Length: 302
Image 1: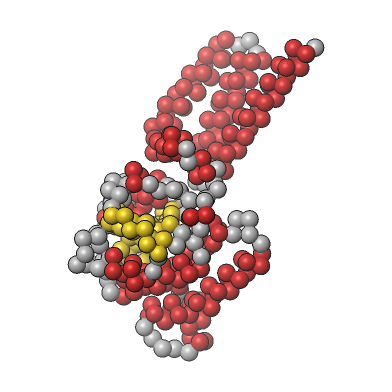
Image 2 (image 1 turned 60 degrees about the vertical axis):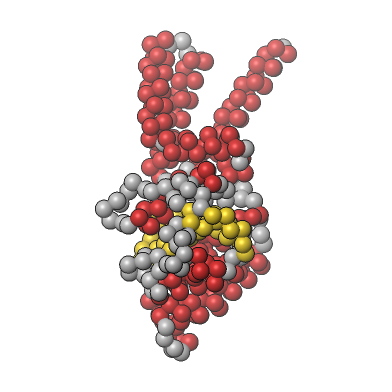
């Protein structure tokens, strides 16, 4: 009696661990097509386990095992970047990134959003190319880049960001890495994306490349040729955008990281402060003195 009880307990734990692992995978996958592939693969694995354990079907079991092996090899090729990242996180012990719990160092404030938008608007007006990578919890490290750049470790400010992208400085061609309210490094060389090579320039390909590999970081791009603003997130690029639109996107993306576990009062306070500051960013973006009603009209039009 005790023996069968032990067997059932092991089976229960086995199922619980498998379900927990599956739920963790599903929570980390956001693309619908990838989610379908993962569901199909887990269905094959579950079917193979059920047949081997509860049914004596040697030929069917061999066929399903062969299908699982073929799918495993195909997914290893298709998801080689994701699997490499998974091994890196496991090897370095960055389990908080896998579990979706960003440390406090990645949490920015509304001041950070305003400084980023103000910097992007001024760089856009001067047609000065820029790349700003904002780490939202991917825990980016020097080995994640082609070149880690120059260590800065300074408090985030608009003046410092503008100076880092000055054309007569050796760091202006690379990207700036921002975590929370600090500038970590400058002159960072990012991996390039393989998509849209004929459509985008090097800066936009770099923004796509870093956000493809790390889903919890975003990249602000300022075009040197046209001065247009863009925002890359999870391998997708939204362009062109205005300063007001950039403020909305940053408030949404960064705000989601900050409001995990916070109460509704703090959330409404942050939204109110972002709305009151949006008018100033619109004025700095178009360089016109208009009335308050016209500012609201322009904001709706954008």
